[in-house]
Length: 331
Image (cartoon, rainbow, N blue to C red):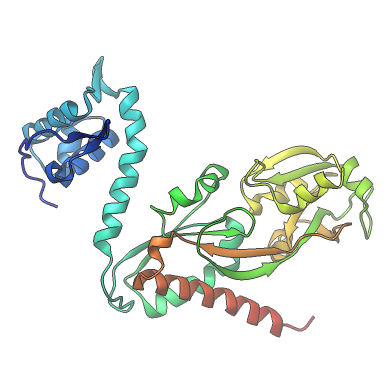
């Protein structure tokens, strides 16, 4: 993008049907770049340095942005600048818009993984990453050495806004049942087991629903939109669990189970990893637990994009390789 001095080309908005709409013809993407830098840096001097502009040039951009939004955006408080409440609202939208622009200009009619230097972003829980991470890593290293894949943790808040979030991120790995109306690809299946200390005082080889109700729990991602299906099943069965610990990492669960009478529900694929260095054992769930189907989700706008299609293919390949290795290990 050209970060030169911006010329004022007239009003940015015009009335249409009683509403204010943006006059795209009068917009300059440099304004978006300037706005993003100003909201991130909260300083004209620092934002100008980040963009490689002179301070007067960026001050001119800030003046036009202030006229457009009819808001000062940055206000001096003591020796520093702070964002106005309106600017705070803009910050997330500006970041989303910048990500969208970058994605538009990063795609091409064809995609050659061997020569590409493209960056992909995937939102994922540590559980899924522990299952397919090694496979994805090896495929990228062997076939696309210039490609960068960024894995970021998702949260209940991001899951609740999956469609909106996937306008910025390339994909999200999430079990079925948490998102709908988006294209997805099933990766692998798993089941749930109860994890307890090896010397749990009341639970032996099996557990009952009464055991689940009478012992404290460690749970992960407890919220209305990120509550594991087996926990919902227990609620429907009338089992009122006492949640004592909540963590947003499946790999952190053993620390809060070992040496206690707590119970946790974990994915069976994770058990060998969770047991390393911890005296833990598993018992079957005392009800017909719903199987877990882990899937890759993306925004419909990415469906036909060649680079994204390649990304989906290698994630699926890594998942299938995990299943192949698992089925070939003697039981």
